[in-house]
Length: 105
Image (cartoon, rainbow, N blue to C red; front, side):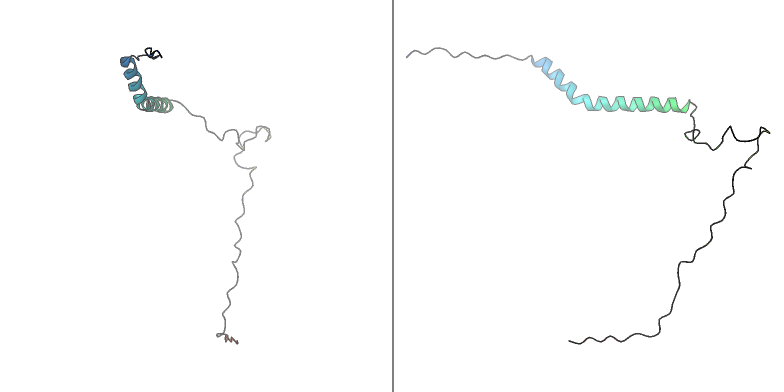
């Protein structure tokens, strides 16, 4: 029986590169949060100096086809809402005396 030396197949890692990669991975959430804060700040600065369109302009009740061409007529074509009539909630009845309770076994 002959003995021969053991062969190890392995690779030595460059520890300096590994430490840099690990440090970058540890700081990634902080960097992402800072970038998100900067983007939000830029959006705020842009929105302050920008004119915004109202969202309900497409749903406006102004119809250019209405009218006789006499110019602005104000709210003439609008119907006025009638005041809602009060509906009673119900009736109140007073009970006379207490009824007796009888329980037989």
